[in-house]
Image (cartoon, rainbow, N blue to C red):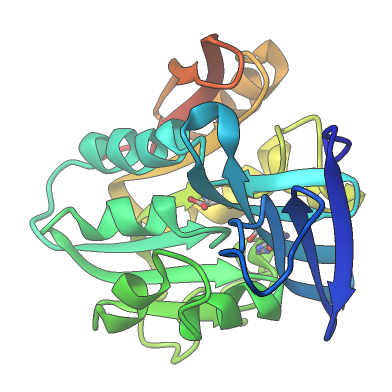
Amino acid sequence: MLGFEGLSWQCASGLLTCLSGADRSDSVPHPKPQFEELDYRQTPLGELILRRRTILALENREVHEIILGEAYLMSSLYTAVETALSNLGLAAVSGYSALDVVVGGLGLGYTARTALEHEAVRRLFVVDYLKPVIEWHEQGLVPLGKGLTDDARCEFVHGDFFELALANDGGAGFDPSGELQKFHAVLLDIDHSPQNLLHQRHGSFYAADGLRRLAAKIHPGGVFALWSDDPPEASFMDALTEVFAVCESHVVTFENPLRDSDSASTVYVAKVAE
Ligand SMILES: C[S@@+](CC[C@H](N)C(=O)[O-])C[C@H]1O[C@@H](n2cnc3c(N)ncnc32)[C@H](O)[C@@H]1O
């Protein structure tokens, strides 16, 4: 991915910048860097990098990318399914005019921003385990940061989504003030899929017992929705069906401009009985 021909890497003041073209004398305008490392942190999940990239093949389109260890966590080039997660999840909630919503995994903020575009959303708690990700938004280092921090309905929660989802009644919850114990929608985009996890300790959440604990935190008629990079999985649908009254999987296709073809991911939507 990083091995483009004709690129040279420069490291200055802790910022790694990849430049196109050999000459950077002061007499010529500096070309736009093709890769710019905006932040680098060691985290409990591995090395975390926020990078801005200019894609020549897409008329110098600028994208932000989060890389965790060896894995791409999020790119602003692909946001259709992150957006669909909010839209499909919130559309399925029935019986309420004001919604209290949890988003698991802030990333670059597309799921959260889409949720806030729904006027019915009264409060939004966005839980992220990695403090630097929250700081990027608070400092305006990522494009959607200011919009999220300026919206009084939106609160960032630094914590482990799975620990909060599995907590017993009366334990720590998604609302740090403890005022709200139940929510109308929980929208989750953290692991690559229910089988392909960022960390093995997340595994128990995706079995029926874990999902049951989450469902207890959702109002009647409320919804749990999940992003997955894999096609719909029968075993996960079985676990959802054990717990929720209505379960669906939606295959969302989107254009992949770098491949000139379509890609697809899955959004599961599971609804608590009314
Ligand atoms: C794929 S990104 C989310 C992308 C997001 N939907 C968007 O629209 O940009 C996954 C996020 O989950 C966070 N994360 C990883 N493990 C977590 C955990 N146990 N609890 C909460 N957040 C976690 C990562 O820091 C990352 O910000």
